[in-house]
Amino acid sequence: QVQLVESGGGLAQAGGSLRLSCAASGRTSSSYVMGWFRQAPGKEREGIAIISTGGATTRVASSLEGRFTISRDNAKNAVYLQMNSLKAEDTAVYYCAAGRVWSFTGRLYDYWGQGTQVTVSS
Image (tube, rainbow, N blue to C red):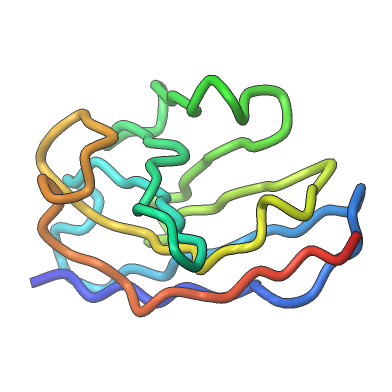
């Protein structure tokens, strides 16, 4: 079992930055691929970024490259999402997830956090 708790969301102005954190519990959490996803009202869940178990390999959705960065610190059982140059369209609930697959497809992930709201004002 892996439990995930996101934090760091809130209100930001357009052009600003936020750093989301995901605290993972569970002895084997470092053996999972970790992903960040988001869901805006009325929209489908969207894969944002994924990171390999050791953290050496990352992938960010092409539409977000250059603005969003994913990282992890396995010693702290934590995964991060650095979001820069925020836009109003980044407003969504952001989730972290743990899985055994290298994929942006959310249904393939095994564990999910409760989500953290990010609101960007223009």
